[in-house]
Image (tube, rainbow, N blue to C red; front, side):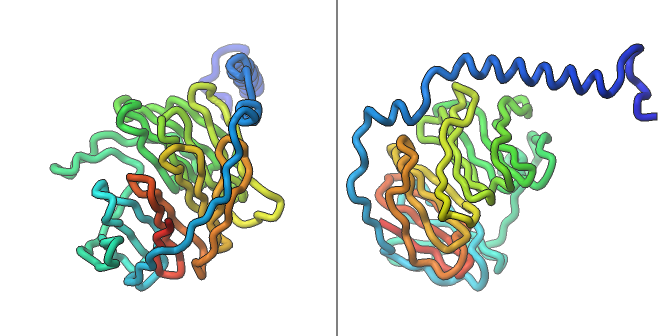
Length: 283
């Protein structure tokens, strides 16, 4: 029977009621930390001036959809992966390909030298689509997002989820830590990007417009954290003012959905990858 193993006088209904009560108390504790809204802080900050970026390089070499990319620490090379089964290392200055290989990854912590699994992380109720490591100064944590609409923050040492956020209405395709490590942004198929403050343990901003009806596939912050770059399934890249919540620019160029996006380590450019088989460097 469904109630086997329950203590005397306990039912599933009573346990569910108790869980909802505890959830309510947690929300009350969260509310105590909520002393000011982000837009109230933003009122004291100057608005951004005209924002102009354009494509500086188009990197062609993949034979299928570009799925993921990131910058190397030398601020020059870019690594990308594609449905064509290749990982390519590019020279973003010359557009030359340097190295090709194949690869795969999961939400797990591995020892690169031995190939052994060190820690696995269980908690999502569906496919995990993205993750991001916290800046090295802030500790041993990472954030993940998935098809269960959840964003979860994990402790790499214990393997436990330490914070969870469930405000998106569809799959979370991308997560990225704020440069200080005190917050993170997410992009979702619900056509919104959201900002979560880890200290306040809550969502503090939503970046959306009624005219945006396609999902956000990838997000990243400018080096200062003032701008949020977001790639969308309608082939565009939107640039948001993180503090004021307004869109400051929209970039066109890709001929299919933007699947990945990363700002360079020195903040002078960012690179986007698309299902049109190309990467573009913007500055």
